[in-house]
Length: 261
Image (cartoon, rainbow, N blue to C red; front, top):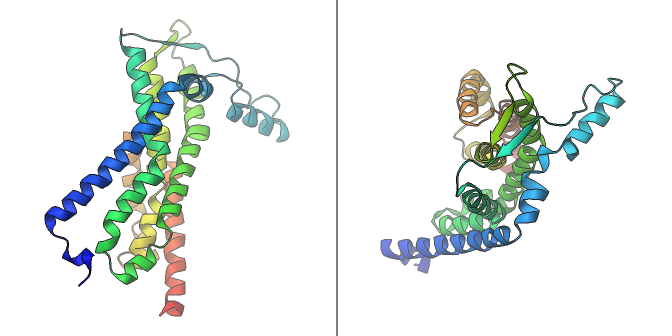
């Protein structure tokens, strides 16, 4: 009997504890670095979408010109300012952003630690199906973070930050609100982008199929709307695209299954 099978319940708890300690240490290291280099994190990254010279806005402007729309897709100066409303607001924001940055940067290591804890309990077939999972999960997560930061966040800031019900009402947005918009969109979009991997394993194990996913597409749309309502501002399109991508993945797995058998 292998050493893995001889491990008792307390041994598993001890291993899980050390995996969590290592993950927390990695998050802390990246978080401390983000805390130290706050000028890069805030001025260069977090607050960058507030400037109309941000790369996303410039690309939209060039796209509009290429399509013959003139400057219709070009954004002018944003007419809102950020305000800190509490004594410890900026310090608390600094700590929160540093922690979230640590989580994002340490994701591959944290996922690897989780996988190392789960892997011994899987069967050989399940391990083969999960080959390269750390790389693919990390890649999808970072793609989601980049999509949230470069697409969803700037467009949301441009729309919500400049929207006015009346010209007599000026937008003076709190720092917490602005930071929450940026961090929630980037982090949650990274998590949502893991959907194709989840569908891949469920399809490989025969739990779901392309027909099943297609049949309950309308139900999935309702679930997506509920999830989008939790995310502020809502993100429906990318979630629906990922769901359709999951159907494609499941269909390819079913097509290749006879060859594997």
